[in-house]
Image (tube, rainbow, N blue to C red; front, side, top):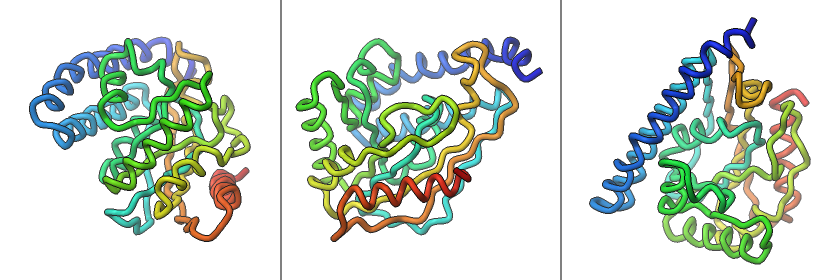
Length: 244
C-alpha cells in the first residue's frame, strides 16, 4: 500500500523539490555576490528547511533530536552513518548554527540547480574520487577553513550509502585529515535511522508514511587518542543507537 501511495505522491514531491532548487538558485547567486557569505548561508539554510519539509508531501516524517550541549565557536566534525541523499538537507538545516560543511563528489558541482552553486561557493570540500591526492588536499583545505572560521563539517566515514540501513565499517582517513589541519575539533556522532526506506524502491516510486530520525549522540574528545580509535567509538555509538 505504501508503494502504491508512492506512485501517486512521488511526482508531487519531485515537483516541489525541483521548484525549490530552481527558485533558490538565482537567489543564492544574488545573496552571495551582493551580500557575501552570511547572506548566502542564510538563504541556503532556508532552502534546506523547505527541502526537508517536502518529505512530508510523501507522508514521511522527520525527527531531529539533539540533547547535547554542543559548543558554539569550536570546530566540530559530525560523524554520521549515511543512508540516502535525503540525509543531507535535514543535516544542513538542523546543524545550521555550526556552519556544517560537507565533503562531496566533484561531479556534483556542475549541472544541479542550487546544489552545485552551494558546493562551489559555500565552503564544501569537492573531491575527485579517482584522484586520491586531490581528495586529500581538498579535505585538508576544509580542515583549514574549519580552524580559521570555527566551522563544522559533516563526514560519512562509510564511504557509500547503506541500502538497507546496516552500518558499514567506518574509515578514519577523512577524519584524520580534518584533525591534522584542525586538531581542536570535537567529534560528534549522529545516528540516522530509516532514511534508506525513503528510497527502498529506487528513485521512483519513493516510499511513503515512513518515520525517519536523526539523533545527535554524546561528543567524543579526540585529543591524545589515535584517530581510528575515536572513529571506531563513533561507529560503535551509532550502531548502539540504531540497535545494531
